[in-house]
Length: 135
Image 1 (cartoon, rainbow, N blue to C red):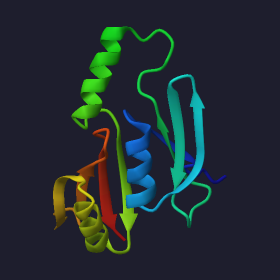
Image 2: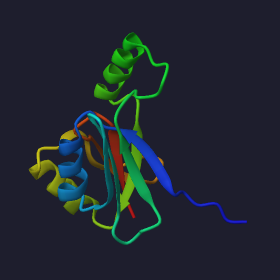
Image 3: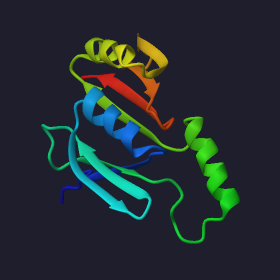
Image 4: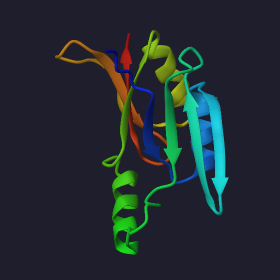
């Protein structure tokens, strides 16, 4: 039996900024862009992996979430302590330069980690922590 990752979910606080970042800066395809009332769900993914996607969701839209809980969630998102994702690239330094030129919020420049990985880290426009490993 094989088990694969199909979708990962990250919150967004601004659909247009998320779309610009994931589509225009990272080069992901937009697979779905679904709106309902004043909310918007975006599904993006790498062009070479049509079976893998990231669903960017409005934060704290579950029934039963109180306004206080919603505010706590938004604070955690902004601090990069709510959602996180690790990507991989065959050109970490080139991608880092592209992200930096686009104004991404850099958390860590590319370095060789003691545990054998070369990586960098930044925050997406909502504050989610995104790490990128060198393939």
